[in-house]
Length: 77
View 1 (cartoon, rainbow, N blue to C red):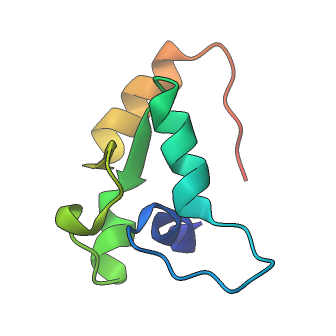
View 2 (tube, helix red, strand yellow):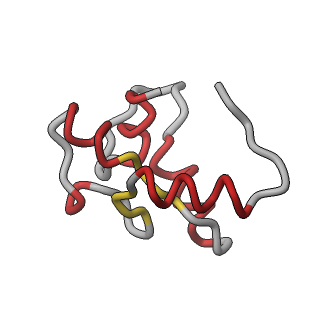
């Protein structure tokens, strides 16, 4: 799960034929979606908040708990 934090890294160079997750997440943001990135996962991968795509922000376990409590359903992988 921690490697998913890299999906929100800006300026991705994607080989031809592969999905550009930066563009896909940008579409989510442009439709008022919220992109929160695990702060611990970012730390483990040397990522900074400045390196995230526009509209994404560094999150934490308190925010995850709030989202989980607020939601009607939760997906767990």
